[in-house]
Image (cartoon, rainbow, N blue to C red):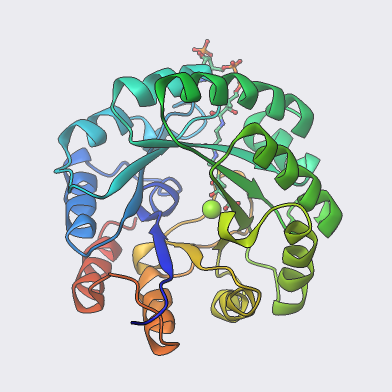
Length: 283
Ligand code: HMG
Ligand code: MG
C-alpha cells in the first residue's frame, strides 16, 4: 500500500474570502458539496470573523447549516476570538482554527493585535474548545515573508509554533501567506520548527504568488511533512496581505502527490470538475 499524504481543502474559506462580489450562499454550499464528494477528509468552509473585516464570510453559519455533511469529513471554521468560537459551535463546526502570525506587522493588520495578545485570546478559545471536545488547528502566517515587515526569521516561527503546540493545537499549519517562500527559505523555516514540534503535527499552507508552491511542497515532503492545505482552482488570497494571490491549486497538489506515489483518497477527475465550477465564482 502506498504511503498516505493529505490535502486539506481550504477553498470555501481561504479561496472565497477575498472575492469582492458577494457570492450567493447557495453557490458556496454547492461548492462544498461537490468537494465533499471528491473524498477530502477535512474541508474549511467557514470563518466566524468580523463581517466588517471580511464581508464575504458573513454567511458562514448558513453555509454550515445547508451543506450535506459526509460522514468522515470534518468541516472546519476559523475563529479569532470567543465570539467567533461561540458562532462556530452554534453552527456545529466539527473543528475550529485559530490564526496567529509570525510577524507583528501582519498580526496587527489582520487581527488588530500583537502576536502576544493574540496568543492570550487563543488561550480562552482553546480552553473552551477543550471543554466542548472540539479539535483546534493553529495557523501561523508569514512564515517566510511578511508584506509589512519583510523576511521572517525561522526562529520566530519556531517560537510561535511551540506556543501553539503547548496550548494544545492538534496540528499547526505553516502559512506562506504572500507566496514568496522558496524551497530554501521554506526548508530553513521547517528545520527550525521541527526542533519544537514533531513533523506529524505540521502542515504546509502555501500560496502560489511566485509559482513556487509546488516546489515548496516537494521540499516539505523531503522533510517529512505529509499534510498540505490547498484551494480548489487555486482561488484565494488574504484581504490583509497586499499582493497575496491564491493558495496552491488542490488539483495540482493531488496530482503531485499521486505522481510521487502517495495516496490521498481524493478523486482527481472529480476534483478537476469542481475546479472548473469554482473558477466561475470568481469576480
Ligand atoms: P477589532 O476591531 O480589534 O475587534 O477586530 P473588536 O472586538 O473591537 O470588534 C470590532 C467589531 O467586530 C465589533 O462590532 C465586534 O462586535 C465585531 P461593532 O461593535 O463595531 O459593530 N466582532 C465580531 N463579529 C463577528 N464575529 C466575530 C467578531 N469579533 C468581533 N468573531 C477581529 C478584531 C479579530 C474581530 C478582526 O480583526 C477580524 O475579524 N479579523 C479577521 C481577519 C481575517 O479574517 N483575515 C483572513 C483570515 S487569516 C488568513 O487568511 C491567513 C491564513 O489563510 C493562513 C495564511 O495564508 O497565512 C489562515
Ligand atoms: Mg491562506
